[in-house]
Amino acid sequence: MVDIPKEITETAHHHRVAVVWSVLSAEIERFAAGTGTRMTILDVGGGSGGFAVPLAELGHEVTVVDPSANALASLRQRAADVGVEDRLTAVQADADELPDVVEDGAAELVLCHSVLEMIEQPEAALDALAAACAQGGAVSVLVPNRIAAVFGKALGGQFSSALDLLVDVDGIIEGKDTIKRRFETATLTAMIGSSGLVTEQVHGVGVVGDLIPASVAEAEAGTGEELREFELATASRIPFRDMATQIHLLARKPIR
Image (cartoon, rainbow, N blue to C red; front, side):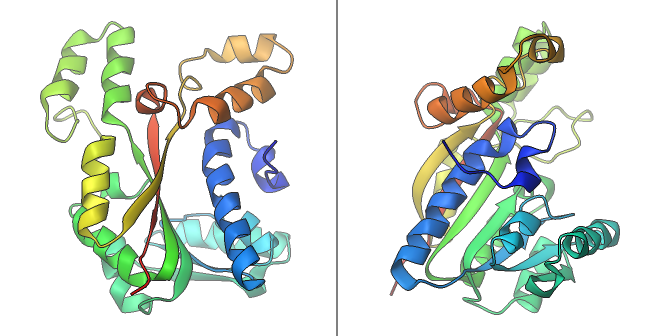
């Protein structure tokens, strides 16, 4: 059983973050076993602090870089509400401005969740994430999965849209998508490798969670907990991993 902080378990869809949190928890434990100290964490695009605040509650020093002033205001308020404002720094900047606001090698753990699909040059952003990560540190990346999007549209009977997603190199529907691209595991790991990082783990997030009608979850007592356990059990298993709504990847910066 993964020990998820109360900040996360109280959210309506905590099964969506259970897999990511399990990976981050293992990385934190690995770091603590080696050094016995708390981590310095950078959360790029961390918004109002869905991960940053719980991590600060655990005693880590967290910097959130996000372009939204409103999101950062909410972050500061949430941090104040739980008494961790002294361990949390908010910086207003875009991902491509990261080299200007964060020192190279500043963080033992770098998060970049739901960001790469929104920007024009994900390769440049990955280079900046790698630069900000300390040698031996880890980078956590979360992106939408192209295969899942194709499958989801087809299951909904939207075969034309499914075909558009299938043939478009970036996995988007022209004129209908609010994001710029979707990813597949092979293309994402190749981009990660080009930035100088080494992929260690790949997990699927949302194998079936987004396919289950809300009425089913509400009708069955304990479904939420069982769904969470199912997601954790299937996240790294092929073919389930490759059908998930999102791809989560943990990469490491080699020690040179």
